[in-house]
Image (tube, rainbow, N blue to C red; front, side, top):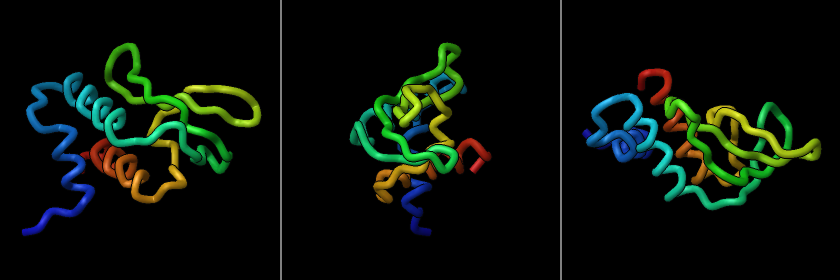
Length: 101
């Protein structure tokens, strides 16, 4: 059976990860390698620019440093929608993985 693009991304991010912290590190590395920054995005229907990917201090979440008209803030990466649809596939894969997919 042929794997979907999202399934391949999940596999790339999580292969050889032995625990939850390593898995989040795998996602962090994948985002750093694959997402072109800065790039335009939306978060909660607000236009923004994705500036940087940031792993949480505890290592069990991935955040995005974004800039809006109101200023710069940190948001969970799964709340973003990238304007570049092929690039947004990586965030869609992360969302699916978070839900147990």
